[in-house]
Length: 133
Image (tube, rainbow, N blue to C red; front, side, top):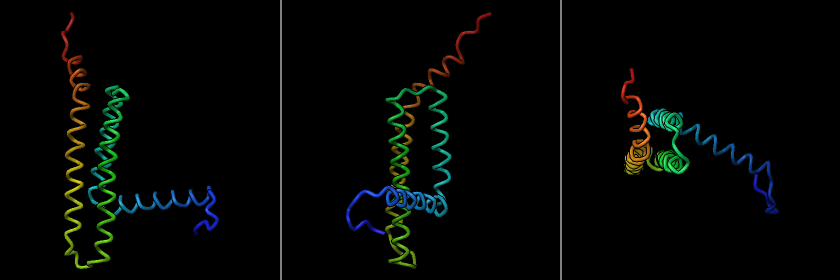
């Protein structure tokens, strides 16, 4: 229900937030790649936390993860609209949207590697340091 007076309504904002969460749940249930993205997200977050990644580097990781999830959400929306417009699935829109996700994933992997490698390298150096008897 819209707010005809144009006033701020906390309840209305809360309902909209609920719609957004519903949309994310639709994406998680309907997209086979959502689970691998979720697993990769958890691994990156845990690895970055374990390695003690600094705030400036966390920003890069968060942006990379957000871009992939946003692309996946748009791909899901395009897929649902494509089903409405072309029920036989002949639309190229799905392929194009999937290609966009792939581009974002490749970029996120590069950002993750560039960001995490110095921390991982330093950790491995400590592990393989000289043995003192």
